[in-house]
Image 1 (cartoon, rainbow over the protein chains, first blue to last red):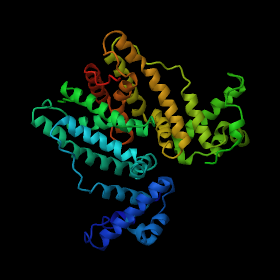
Image 2: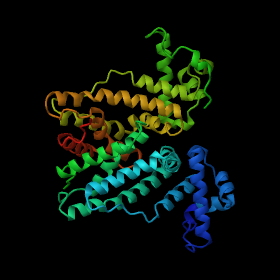
Image 3: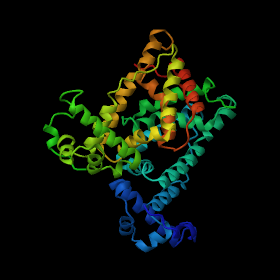
Image 4: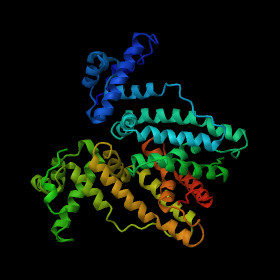
Length: 209
Length: 209
């Protein structure tokens, strides 16, 4: 895991000519990283593997991304650039339910779960991967907060409810079982998390200040 | 990570002469595994390292534990054999609060957190480590269920409340931040988790059947 110092002075990956050759290269590299993570996991991911599967020369990868950690961090950053927005079902319970079921659907499907699971696992081995994972989830949960902000605006949640705490609360029991207790998750568990979170919101358990 | 087939026919580690030489050997091996995990993490843990730091010959380690995965699984099994029991403060909120604060205290101290964090990380790389982690937490949360069973018996929680779901719910927001979003945890967050979980229990959100 040697961080190249070149990486600090090079332009950020993909910063030149969006949509052009640089963007295509970055996407090809990202795809190779995701494939490698899905099929072999982080410990087996190498710059050589990414070069072979992306068609981008190893020298270019080292120059632009610095290391395997840099490749991983950029793949996560690119994953965070999607246009995903949280559901708007008209109720807090409906919105939180959609979020919770999306976790079950994503991680219940081994093919879809492999790369995100590998990202979570990589953070145990690399401080840079941990930072990238933190940034990814901070931004993702920030988008989710809209469902709580709407509920407060509609008078369906107490003023002062911490939106970030609520959206984390509804997914936490699922992530606990996925990555700590290693237990199966299903729709019933998602529904239980929604019931629990909505009851807690209603009782003002997430009001801060 | 080669699993020796010898391991399947050998007696379970430590099964002979409890408290005697076998138990001492097993504890020395466990200590070396924990030290290795704390200082270098699972990817760097080798049978050679454990031999060197436990004073137990490599041949013995391979014969009795089969592999690094076997060493890790047995260290977790031994960790699960402690006499820990959940707090009994007289109230559900007090008991859940003690559990949640224990998570904060354990994982907020880098020295104490290193080995358990490495166990959670190892499960991403080894199916056998994942099974051992699952068994450890299943047993640990099973012990915690007593606090909910007592609350139901005292009429402080609805009949039919799922004890396992409740004790997982109160720690889930902490584990999410530790291992997924990589955010800091503190006592205030533990208190929030307790308020939310108690409100959900009171509302019957964890009643099953």
